[in-house]
Length: 177
Image (cartoon, rainbow, N blue to C red; front, side, top):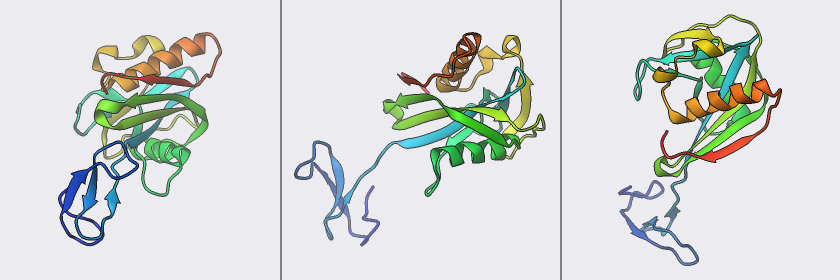
């Protein structure tokens, strides 16, 4: 950040009084600009015993398989963002059943969240950010072509919990996305 979004004057980096981190502070109006982690909301959409995955049409990881997920928008709840991303990326309407996983990735300043989700019907179609969508049995999951560690981990947890008929909340810190 070079300039204040309030008054346009240049900013400096300093630790404000009562704080413990470097922040951008405006040289003109004194506003402290906080930069906080970005939240990614998604879901594990299920139809019968199959999980829906999307093949990415965008970077990073173009062509790899992922769960429908993306950055929250201002004014959205976590659940609204997860449902919106499911519709945008896979053309699916889902019923959410609580948060399945929260993955902190401090090195990227991101927090990934995935909800348990049931598809309202089996219809799906790729959105603008997906090359294709497909329902997979557990044995068909293309593990070597999963886009991100967070997606892989969410799928691993889903299948292990499903065997035990559980729907717990998992929270982990991951070393890569």
